[in-house]
Length: 326
Image (cartoon, rainbow, N blue to C red; front, side, top):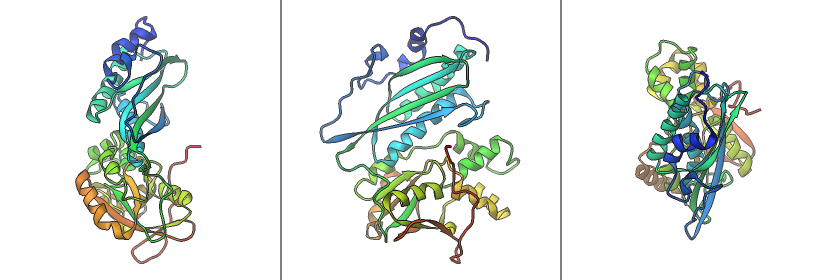
């Protein structure tokens, strides 16, 4: 990167971010804050995630891909709560050497996904930094009062479900870092790492059906553990039932240790949820309406902790249950 032309914060915002402003109270990004109406009988759901250069994305990642993933991981948190997006707030700390063209690509990627997911920019901040690039996004959504999905609603006897396939994003990171080279489906795996899909329709369809829910960001075992801890239960995962894509299944067939990618890889942003066994038909109807396949992968038990077992019932040992932030 080389230094951008002389500019100021307001002209930068006007060029790149004002065109992304939401009609839902952003005021054209010309004021200090947005003014947002909340529908009667609804609650506001708020979430925030940050991405740091070299920690959450590789230094050679395209600017548009950084913006798209930043938005999508936040929308995934709304999906896990059963919320519908209202808008987002964005804070950008650009290194002093960042070119204007780089920022334009970042804004274009963000704009494309704001449009795809039917939401808009409500405001934020831009600053210059002498350190690494840091981006923080706050996503706001609404949910009918009392219907938000949480981590605390799992009960013994519930079934455990997950959407989509797991382990692809972790394998995709291996593709991008060259740790997994020359494998079939490499491009598809890399795309799962770059562009996770927030399961917004599924989260909303599961309101009133799921007991507890979370998105799989830290890894299946770690995130199932979060539900178990908050709900005060134990969760048993059947490793052979965890859904994996064809490219990952081929890798696991060659090296059984790679099952850890599906159990603990993280960054998939699929929905992990529990529901009473008697609601299996309702789960099937909700997932059909949302257009996403789900798999039953385990059971909620009395007790504490999280266990993975193979088809013979033996514990599956993995080095770490998933991503740790500190």
